[in-house]
Amino acid sequence: MHRLLLIDDDEALSGPLTQYLARFDFALSAVTRPSLALQRLASEAFDAIILDGMLPEMDGFAFCRQIRASQDPWREIPILMLTARGDLTDRVVGLELGADDYLAKPFEPRELAARLQTILRRTRRAPTGAVPASASPATPGLMRFEGLDIDATRREVRTHQGVVDLTSTEYELLALLAREPGRVFTRDEILNRLRGQEADLYTRAVDILVSRLRKKLEPVEPVKTLRNAGYCFALPERVS
Picture 1: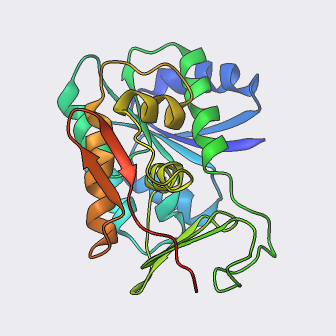
Picture 2: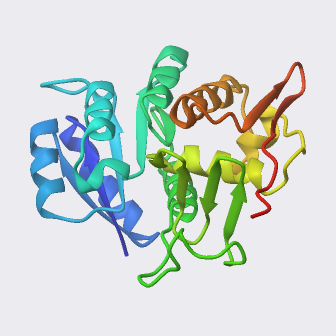
């Protein structure tokens, strides 16, 4: 059973959504304010957050930024943003702030369930006792490049400066490219692979993710842009 926290000031939404998501093995808890959400996050464990863009106290985008910038244990929790229908600006801002996906209101509950399942599949953590990133180059799941290590077992990325704090989507993008160095992935291919569904016209989301990833990995530059083609992983493998 996956535990979800809904943060939405529409109190009429939580009841029907709780019943519907239970069919997919989701247990939904709901709060109407960010302050109440922080209290729940501090006292309970959740697998994902459903976050409305419009909230009292602060909007959902500011709250998303606060979570991602904090040092609290829940800073990496997957976040699905609920945005206004057709509002591209909301979608761009949400992804730039570290949200893992977005869904426009009004939405179909089945689509919400599908997107949550996709997010949780790609953010599933390894069990306790996983092999540390400092293991030998032959460690299964460890990809070593010049200036960059990607430990797929721990879902951990390291540079010479230490562990890099990536969101689940940023990690998945980097791992996708690194598994096939030199291969050019189009924006639509990346969207399809990361979201597990047909890409819509919103391919700018990939550019935003790449920009965020590059900034966090500086001065290492693993992702190369090929004009009018897409992106590829450009670091050589480490030989020692």
